[in-house]
Length: 345
Image (cartoon, rainbow, N blue to C red; front, side, top):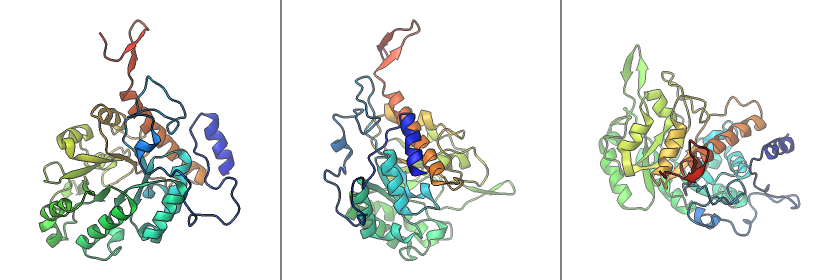
């Protein structure tokens, strides 16, 4: 199944990384040594700033510049498969790194396991999503500040530079009361960026029910850095492009996914399958010189097979790269059919 799927991707020209372990003897695995030349920095894999290199589609084109923003895969995107599958799939499809969603999956909580997976698959861990979900209330203890401290420590140990944080639930009143100031103090003590994610209100009988404090919308909150999630903007019916503009330089992390705005349903569709401005958002980020992370956080639970899941994640990656590159073209076709420098009159 996996071999046939690789052949299908190769026939349509999708760039596949060499499979880890080819030509190796049996018994070698994630606990083994990292492959020589393990690149942990995007700059190490490019021939110049923003260049389109063999890391991206195998072709160097002087007419297209791909922004330096790494495109990474959230481990949540392979659920119900486990964290090791996310590393394997990300490496095979050519993602630039991983965001670890710390969850009830024990491997997402284990520093040593994560380090071995990163080394084995040559897949740097770029960000850590703190265990802020309802299902992870007991992961790394019940004390919310302790969860953030632990997330920061893991990020520092693994070489990640962002910790994604949700605003407090409304019943976490003590935590919520100190959240903005407390997070600001933590930010002053580390180079790790704490990026608070936009959420959404719940609706019951036509009325909004506030689930988060101080608010689900980060725009008017004094957070140093923010994560913008486009599936969440679908649920809240927010204008994602307007929100990005209002956040300005505070926008340092993007969860790219789509949605159609079903009430109370956080869909996380593959980009392009909903009504959110995923393509225009990517093009705007590229035009603005965005250098934060772009994380594919999509729901593939309906995939009947591993091959279907990989097709969804390959489509998501291709969509993202194409729209980033579209904004960075140095040429355009004029109305007369001639190719000229982009923006020339």
